Amino acid sequence: MPKAYLGSPSPEGRMPGAALADADLVAWWSTFGDPQLTRFVTLALQQNLELSQASARVLQARAGLQSAGAALLPSVGVAGQASKAYQSVETPLGRVLDSAPGFDRTGNAYESNLTASWELDLFGGLERSRQAARADYQGSEAGAVAVRLAVAAQTADTYLLIRGLQARLEVAQNQVQTQQKLLSMIDLRFRKGLAAELQLHQAEGALVRAKATIPVLQAALEVAMNALDVMLGTSPGTHRAELAATRPVPALPQIASGGSPGDLLRRRPDLIAAERQLAARSARIGVAVAEYYPKVSLSGLLGSATSISSGNLFTGGAAQATGTIGLRWRLFDFGRIEAQIRYAEAQEAEALAAYRQAALRATEEVENALSSFQRRQEQADLLAGGVHSLTRARDASSAAFQKGTVSLIEVLQADEALLGILDGQVQARTESARSAVAIFKALGGGWEVEPAAAAIPLAAAAPKDAFVRASSSEQ
Image (tube, rainbow, N blue to C red):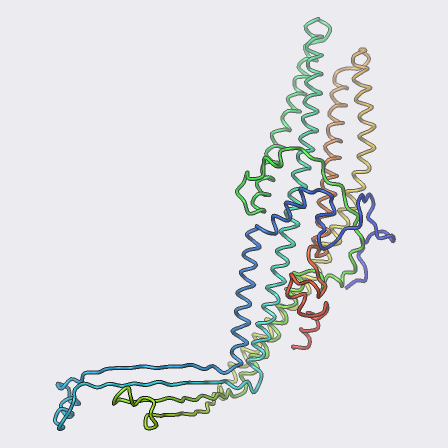
């Protein structure tokens, strides 16, 4: 992996245009300084149904690990039965028995046994199965964390989109008010015979064009609000009243250096999950190889049986015991075993390629997010200067029109240009904030990687580099 990102922050570790303190990768959403954003992300992490599904998958993998571990231990069982039979005398056996003096057609049988069995893992097949199950379990935990980060990022991104759409809607509504005032002025002048009918119709058309942008923005805003409700695990419309009040797009946090691309291998949970899948595939090669060797098992039975009376069940004469050594060896099935090994090796090769591809994709996501953040900041800075200039141009054209030195079309063009640049400025600010969210997500922000993190069992299970190291040692 490269030692640094192409779009790394400045040497001081700062992104341009930053407004807050250094962002915390663990709870990065709080660094936007918006309590409502923080509240919604917290609610999503508590209520999102995708997280509930991921938690259930972790429980399934944990059960699989427990089952694989139990296969290494002896199994002990208790069995007992009592039966009563009435013999037919119309069968060949019944007729023979009936001819004997004192034959009783009624018979009883009682039996109680303690059984035990144990497959000896002489060649490591069961242990390799447990290693595969452990890797699957750790991968499912990492996958659950990845879902958690995706939910937090999607919630924050949707919230920022809502605030951006509200800001754009406010710009459009202000423009409608401006056009309405201009139309009123032209209408008054027209009725006094001071303005041509053409100017009146031009002003009416400009007002309609400004109004036409509002329904599109309102539809997009409603869609975003519905999406946020679903992310929070609630019905669409639940939080619409809470979001109705327009708020500015949150200020951008400072983003310190996110480390090197190599740090992503330890930081991003989706890469940890991919590496654990690779480790599981490696362990299953060992399971397939173990089929070359014989399986040895021990079993035993200790109990008591009688067909006379239940009172005789635990007497010395009713005692019974059995001990068995079992051997199973696929001695003439090596061709099929070889095919199973090749299949397992091909699965490992696929998982290795997937892991490497995931690492490259992760680096690409960080680079794209860093680039987008910087370029959007540059765009916002440029548009800020343009807004100042076009505002003055619009005021000047309006004043000149009232004096009769310029035509109405110039005033309308100035209004349209100002509306476009104001809308572009809002979009640039919104996209800058959304790019910051993308950076945090791409860097794997939103969870504690240190071994002290009690909330994430896989982080506490081993040092930071144990996941990569475990794969090579297991293989």
